[in-house]
Image (tube, rainbow, N blue to C red; front, side, top):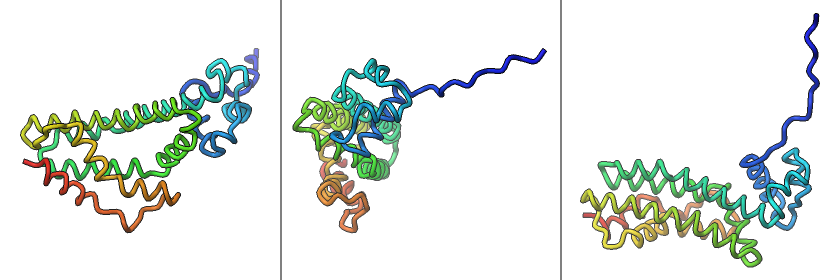
Length: 208
């Protein structure tokens, strides 16, 4: 007796983290104002009712997108900080981290999210503040903890690890980040100083 044939149903739609990732794509393509819940639901292959069950409105969906992006950035940074904490040559470790930070923060994906959040900061200040805290500030605190561990090993002299982490971050990415955001370009610029110079300046202040 032949086995019963299985009917093909609609492929399952995207929910949870997959839905948020889909929504991020739509927001980046159309901007906040040009994004509709209809478009997100269609792209995710779910009904609008299903979308609204997970996110009550577009503001809530946008907030979820921003928080997920910030958390992903933190997770991506963690192994690089662990590698720095275990280094034997502090200059070599800092140069490697600086290159990673610059490549990450100046990547088109990160720049576009930063532009998107900034464009809505006046209208959605809580979302912008959440992004600042869970992306920028949290990563600087994590860097400060790593620098403090290097200080405990006698590789750095750090009266204030948090200030040192903030200074290191801006030395590495401040100028090129400002240039990318104000020119709208994602391309590397010949005016970008080598990360080695930023590390040497940092070590002139905090090296042993």
